[in-house]
Image (cartoon, rainbow, N blue to C red; front, side, top):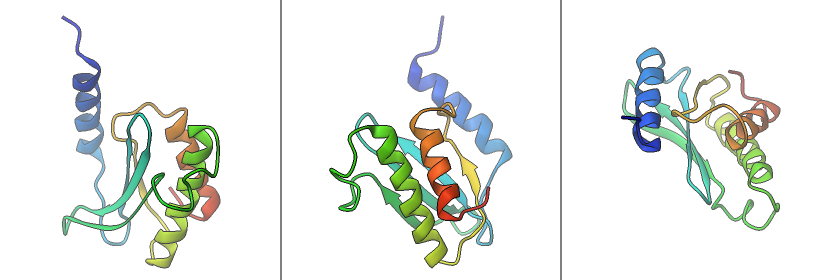
Length: 118
C-alpha cells in the first residue's frame, strides 16, 4: 500500500537528517512549510538549541507580496539578515523532506541573496 503524504515526507526527512547535522559554527537551516506560512530556523544540533528564526507571519512580510513564493523569498532574505547579525555566515540547508522547488527553492535563493553560504 502506498504511503500517505505525511508518511512519505517523514521518511524523506529521516533520510536527509541521517546525513546532515548542525553545529554552532555551521548550523542547520531547517525549513517548515505549512499551507499558509513558511518558517525557517537555524539550529545547533550539538547543543539542541535554536539560534534564530524567521517566518512569513512577521510584520515585515505580512501583506508585502501577493504570491507565497514571493513571500518565501522575502523570508529567506530576512532570515539571512538575522543570521548574519547572530554571527552565522555558513549553514547546512535542511529542506525537511520537501521537494526543492516552489517556495522552498525561493526561500533558499532569498537566503543566498541575503549573504548566506550553503
